[in-house]
Amino acid sequence: MDFLDRFEPQAVIRHFVNICNIPHPSGHEEGVREYVRKCADEHGHDYHIDEGGNIIVYVKASPGCEGVAPYMIQAHMDMVPAKEEGSTHDFLKDPISLRLVDDHYLYANGTTLGADNAVGMMYMLTLMEDDTVIHPPLELLFTTREEVGLQGIREVDFSKISSRRMMNMDCGEPGVMCVSTAGAAQCLVKLPLTEEALCGSLFKLSVSGLLGGHGGLLIDSGRLSAVSAVGRILCAMARETSYNIIDAHCPRFSGIPTDMQVLLALPQDGVEKAQLACDRVAKELCAEYADPEKDLTVKLSALDESADKPAGMLTADCSLALARLLYLIPFGVTRRDFREKETVLCSNNTVEVFCRDGFAQMEMMVRSPLDTVKQDVVDRIEMLAGLCGAQMILLDSFAGWPYRGDSPMQRLCRETYRELTGKELVIEKENACAETGPILGAIPDMDCIATAPYSKGAHTPKEHLDLETVGPFWEFLKLLLKKMCDSADDRI
Image (tube, rainbow, N blue to C red; front, side, top):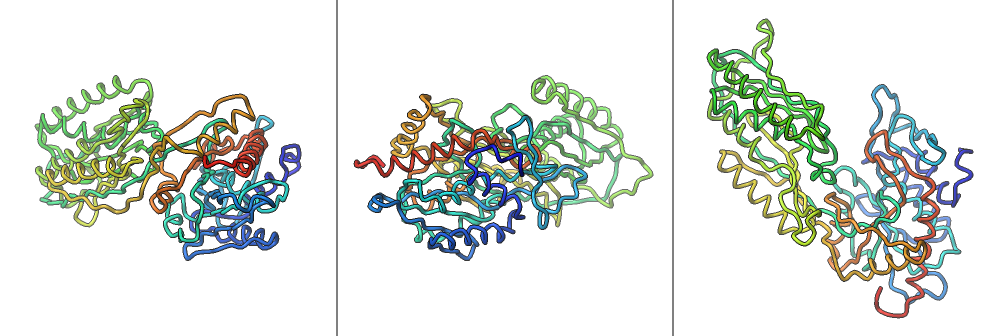
């Protein structure tokens, strides 16, 4: 990696490259954990590995800082294994192949880079070996399976953590400090299906070409969900004619759904009415979402009569109940912070729809930093499901990280950044889930901040790290730790 030699600090860059050479998709973090463990052993640090595979490394304070309160830094060891179409990369065996773009952006060749979250681990590993950094006692928490529902962090034995202040170093950008993230409730709505013998002509309703995007961070971007669009079209059609749904399918999206299909049977005298209703709503949607969804496509097309036909279809009442659920279950921002109108306080996004085993099933994610606000939306979805003859099952739920206005850590970070750059830190409250939520759920008085060097495009082959921000962030981190040791008051 000769092209990386000119970037500083070399110790940090070296750890990033070493991590890229170790396969570590979610659920397969053992190689990275062994790398962390060996580094701890080589430098005489104690550590604890729990049943979930998480590892906490305890770094003793710098001489003279032994009486300072401990500080926790946290990052996750797994990465999202996404690759370009046609790539033969094996995430269980192959190292990440690196390339430099525009002289300072580090990309992978055809895959995710894994900056999410190697950017955090590389600094934590450097702190384990650099004796020149002045710091309080450190508790360095490396977690597993963050990218598959924050699983590892919820298996941490928090009795092993004594810190009451911390930094999460998931992906970010320079000059930005996150001070709040969402918790989430994963809900499954199940509608019992009642069927009858097939009759009528077969048609396929499809919505496609939507922009999609992160189901939390981009939920307020004005984008359309394919699920909501299909529900709106079906309900409009129901006002004009009867129909029977045969199947409904929205493939699982981690973000906002970009396409969905419904197979349905129409009576002969209802075909024209259904087509007119579909065309009308399609025009409405194209006008309402003209800017973000310029590639929106809505089609109601007859199926080839020679194709194999299903044996049955849903009854008219069951079809209407499913259409109403698709339309009425909320999508997007359900509540904003009344003090900061641009801040999302709660949202919901349906991530999958399918018919299987006698049920139409819809899975969704409700996000909010406040448990009470999140629960309010969950309760509403449960009531709505009941009114449509369905039931809601809570599959998972974890706490969020509410904003804390009196945070000493936030104040110290602002002071440190201002001293280094002469500028003010930008404050963000994210409608995305992070491991800070479960940490705050276990240790409510933990004083958190989250920041990292510049990296973008996480979870896609477009992921990249700006190497020119690695050094400045290291200087910020070193000064922050030193100021903790210098402070003689109770602010931190």
